[in-house]
Length: 235
Image 1 (cartoon, rainbow, N blue to C red):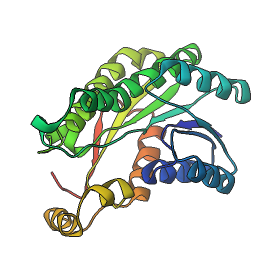
Image 2 (cartoon, rainbow, N blue to C red):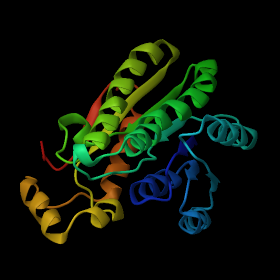
Image 3 (cartoon, rainbow, N blue to C red):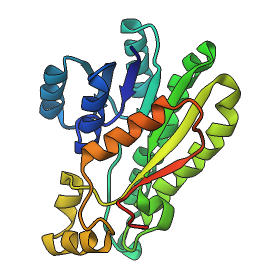
């Protein structure tokens, strides 16, 4: 049985990842704002959860130390916490840009930086970062989001090379358009239908399909430095 730490567990994809791993493993997840959703998920999965601001290193270190007091190790880290912004580049404020970077990229740095020393000491571990199809290809009116998610891909590839000798795999998942509240709240039904039509499988992806990909790539000990598109053939 592995111990799996998932950030952003109260969102649709995070909850699906937590549910997938909870079938066989000890799961701990973090949340920031969705306290009630997190509480219900933790009760349902019978697992621990911690309120954590991934953009704040002190908050992250406090959470990781709490996890390591309860569990002897962290075998799998899933950096899933993220926020989105759909806005023309010239309308994006400096504050909005910085917020995107702080949560979506620096958050990955912070949590990984806190967890990796414990993986290095055991010469074992798996890290899966959640990027986006827009981090690979870019998206109009999502420059800040695309840039942050592209940064996650660069960090993933670099860490795979740096941590390989310590027995740690580092990979990323690049989801396409997923049927989730994040997308449903920012896109109209017509826009979602159009994106589904642009997908060779002719539908949106499901959070559970992302979760199964995360588990598969985390469990394979000879895959590292890879960016796996879970996008229905969108690109």
